[in-house]
Amino acid sequence: MAKRLEQCVALVTGAGAVGPGWGNGRTTAVLFAREGAKVIVADRDLAATEETVEIIRGEGGNCVVCEADVTDADSVSALVDRAVSEYGGIDILHNNVGASLPGGPEDMSLEDFRRQLHLNLTSVFLTCKLVLPVMREHGGGVINNVGSIGGLKHLGHNHVGYSASKAGLVQFSRQIAVQYGPEGIRCNTIIPGMIDAPLLEHRVSQLAGRADLETLREQARQRVPLGRRGDAWDVAHAALFLASDEARYITGTELLVDGGLMARSA
Image 1 (cartoon, helix red, strand yellow):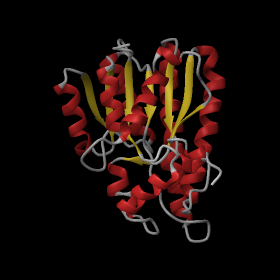
Image 2 (tube, rainbow, N blue to C red):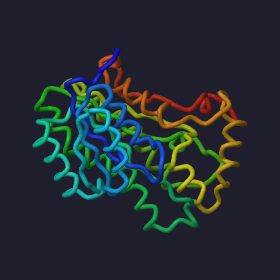
Image 3 (tube, rainbow, N blue to C red):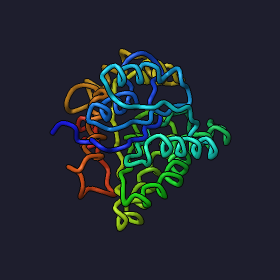
Image 4 (cartoon, rainbow, N blue to C red):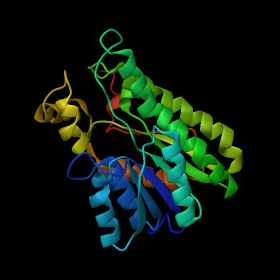
């Protein structure tokens, strides 16, 4: 089953990492390259992509790196133009950008709520808006949108902006799947659960109201049926499956990567 993405061009947003190690975006970009894809490694912070690019090129993979702010229409347009000029098209769009701010409706500012919707949902609208015409012109493609279990269920801490945006992402993906299915374009949502990645250590555990890193890991051991947190490779392999022809009849759905957490009643 090697080289499942040979001859494919994959655009991975958020392909850097917030700290050393294997983040979801970095891991997906590397795995896509290992499976034969030409990868556009995109991130707002080019320094965060250095390790991603070094790994891909060090293994003989093919990639270009692009600085891009996916919340800005002009930046996304330039990113798509670069991908087309370098590789001639885009077969796979993997939307990985996202972040969470704590707070409920009363304590979260209107500005922060709008920022959450803009980063986690409007950014996907922008990339899809500009990539879909490229895919249509080439007769098809695959879009993977990375959601969150926080968009499905209250997890014990309040982050209303994040939850609302990630819930909206599910229905957004279904809409794309239905509208563009006749043109050979598939769209699904990957929904990670409790994932142990640099984001957990360097951002999530630092948020107000959240537990420290070891407590977060212990909570997963107690709550997740498989008894542990997942890692970025679990998410990346789900992305690879959905991007490959093995999933050619799968669209408009959600793939949980959560160790069984959402199957629990409490």
